[in-house]
Image (cartoon, rainbow, N blue to C red; front, side, top):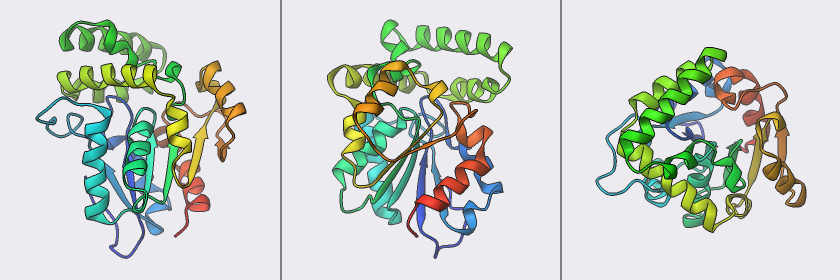
Length: 239
């Protein structure tokens, strides 16, 4: 976790998605966002910092983030992809602390766990890591934007990566992630429909929540459209 701006500004916790780390949000510091808010990008345990001593689960990561939110007196979380579940759990556990969750193409249905859910198909962390990196290498040949993500995954703790992926699959089989997100106090969902599975688009139609569409954005909105995301946050977060 790092503190890049003045102490008087409202604090926003930034959570990267599966296998990624806080560097996902680096380009936001070149936007106008830091002049409005104090940005706190967090490296989740195992993803840029040492892994938890126990099993890496969504719940355990939520407890970690919750303690930081309380310590930093942060009331806003911006969370990407599977980290949206973590943010939702924090909001559920600390309803008087977390005032708003901005989900960046966060998991709504089980079909959203297309990377993390792969972990449950492998028996060991090493097998999953090798297969996942191989898939990302193939994707990077067609899309150079994947290279950054592939490098972040390569630096992640293999056990934490596999454990979190397996837990994301389990959670999505037993719960509807979108319902947990919708239960948060104040939610904004930011997405490009082209990046979302049909089941999640259908879920959004039957479970209305405040949304912002970002046409043409990749799944990693903070990376490829930081200025657009900065304006969305400035326009929709109460200072």
